[in-house]
Length: 186
Image (cartoon, rainbow, N blue to C red; front, side, top):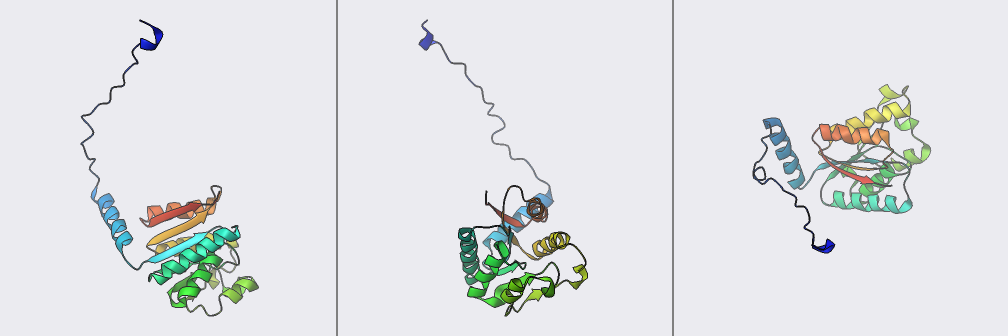
């Protein structure tokens, strides 16, 4: 037999397991049904959080997405921010309908930079947390992200692979059976 005529070894794939469906316990099935119902729902509470370090193009995409989501009847929940994801989400929601925007601050309006305070003028639904005034912004933000996620049905997060705080927020949302969409910026 010549070298190019040699038989190739065959791979055997067992076929007897292909038609079996793994049984899940009731909680998993209920969670899946709840997520499916949320996806099909026309108006949702959607949290948008993410990185502060974004290009102008990414900010424009987030702003446009948020405007579109609000125009479809959704309520946007986010936090304050002078730049990045939160600021773009706020601008987008304000363009479409300020009544459909809820901002949960990690601390108080007075602790926000002046440009954030200016952006929040005219926002009818702002939640402040003076009880967190003495915390570091990082600690208050972690708590704030959990609060935002607890109030939403769906999370949209814009982050980099190295963003530990946002990865933990995404994990919390998944554990809470929220519909999660993650956009990596790197």
